[in-house]
Structures are given as C-alpha cells and as structure tokens.
Picture 1 (cartoon, rainbow, N blue to C red):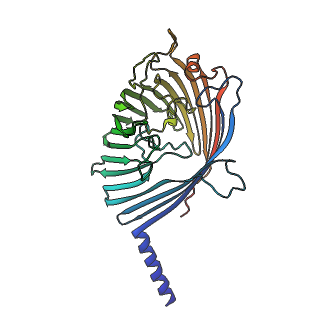
Picture 2 (cartoon, helix red, strand yellow):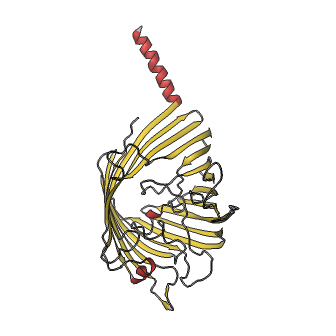
Picture 3 (cartoon, rainbow, N blue to C red):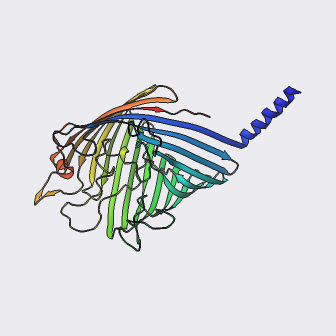
Length: 412
C-alpha cells in the first residue's frame, strides 16, 4: 500500500513538472581592474586606480501553460564601499522583472523590465560587461513565422514618478519613449536584419515637457560559406533632439576567416559620422549608438562612445584580430587604428586626424561548466590629436589591466 502511494505521488509530481518549469540560476563575478588612463588619457604624473567590483545575481524563470515569468535580482558593488558594520545595503536592484503572455509557439507579448538585445548589440544591447548591465521597462510583441522569420515590435513610456512632476524635465531613463520594429530573416547562407527605431526625449528645462523625436533606421547582413564569414551594417539617424536637427550615418564591414581548428583571423572597419570642430551650426551630425553595448566596439579601453565622444568629430576605426581557442583555453589580440571622421582645428590650424592606436589582448579559461577565468591587458598609444580632443598626456603609460572570475551555477 505504501509503495502504491509513493508511486501515485511520483506520478503526480512528474505530471506537475511536465505542465510547468522552474529554473533558478545564479551569477557571481568579481573583477579586478587597474585603470591607468582608461576612457581618457592620464594627466602628466597622475596615478591610476585599483579596485574590485562585483555583480551578484539570482535569476528566477518560470513557465506554465501560457505564462512565462522572469525575475533577476541584482547586487552591484565595489569591494569596500559598504562598511563591514553596515546595517543596510542600498546596492540591490531588479535587473529584470517581466512576464509574457504566450498566445502560441509563434506569438507572445512580453511586459516589464527586460534586456533588449539585437544582432551584434550595436544599437540595442544589454551592456553585459558593465556589472550593472542595461535593461528597459518595455512591452515587446514577438512573432515567429513558419519559415523562420522573426518580427519584434517594442514600446516604452517612462516617467520619473506617478505625479508626473520632474525638477529637470528629463526622465532618468535618458529617454521618454521609444517605438521600434526589428525584422530578421534567413535565405540560404544570408542572414539579414532590418531595424526602425523612434526615440522620444523630453526637451530639457521645458515646463511644457515637450517631447522631440529622432529616428534610427538601417540593417545588418551576414554571409557564411565554409571557413569564410562576412558581415556589414549601415544605419542612418534623423529627426530633432534638444531643438537641434539630427543627421548622422554609420557603416561597418567585417571579414572573418577560420585558418585552422584553433586559429581564426578578422579584418574590419567601422565609421561613425561626426562634426567638424569648427562647425558652428547646431545640427547634430555625430552618430549615436543609443542603446548599444559600446564596450564591445572601438577598443576595450572605452575611449569612444562609452559615456563620452557624443556630438564630437566622429570616428573611423580600422581593426584586425587573431584568435586562438583549443579545449578550455582561448586567447585574442585586437589592434585598433583610430582616426577622426571630421577635421579638428586648433585655432586656424588643422590637426592630424590620427587619434592613435590601441592594442587589446585577452585570455580565458573555462575551469568547469560553472566556473570561468578571464583577463586582459590593453594599451593606448594616443596621439597629440587625441590629447587635444580629450585632454591628458598622450606620452603617459595609458593602459588597463583586468582579471575576472565568473561563477554561474544552476541551483534548481
């Protein structure tokens, strides 16, 4: 009798697990960094900084019938920024908190705080390198077609509070609203994505809270045959931002080749439009990656487009890479050759467009399925033009060293 009862309980439990799924995962990643001229050139004789930052996450994911649900609890800190006797911790946040109505295998509506990532993360990315990362409060309808095509349509509307009162008339999210459509399809060896994004930003210090809109539209294409891969992308921006006309362009093209089972190489170019430093017009001619994962591009030392270089002289980035991967070990070296996209003037004198060369190196080792080690060293050989543009001393040892351990266990 007892064995029959146990069998019934096990069958009921199995039926419940089939009807629903619950996953609980965690992430903990401490990272040491030595910044000695990171994001901008070091001042003459200045010292760098050493610190350890840490991201801690608990990810809850649940599905049942026509419901999908996720919560990602997050704590981001720098070691030592909370007293050892502290009675409280203000470093906790909800990185993700969304639910989805699953109408069918091909259609769902996802609502709440969520990451938005498309293609190579140039326009929409989760900024995963940053310990806090990026997520949006948004509603996204996701349609999957029988032929494999994908269509996402997204909407966001932000406010500082329920009262609608704001002291600076600028939402803390950095934008008031957006609407976008992303379409992806595959035909034979070609993958292609098309994106149209309309972003609304409140006019600063306007008591009427006027919203002005700028548009980003374009696409990305990929091709692969054997050991050769190609990709390219082009985007355009127009509209109005802070009473200024927006007119900017972006282009990139990349070639990848698998030399052997362990070695691969790549060559690429990226061009982001800018504005002549003597241009006195109010037009915004510098391309803005908006919600992209900018650390992934234009050198890992974040000299360009990571909270900087907006509405500036633009950028031309020529780069190459050689990668090695065998078993659990990987290594990569990436040189970048930076130039301004437009002229820079010191008085009436035109400066060289050469901004310098950055060399990025990284290594990684997967210790187990749940534990990985990685580290890297980067050095910026800045030019006098970069010094004129950003300040600091281009002759200083401008470098960056980091080491990170990532723990990603599945708890349940």
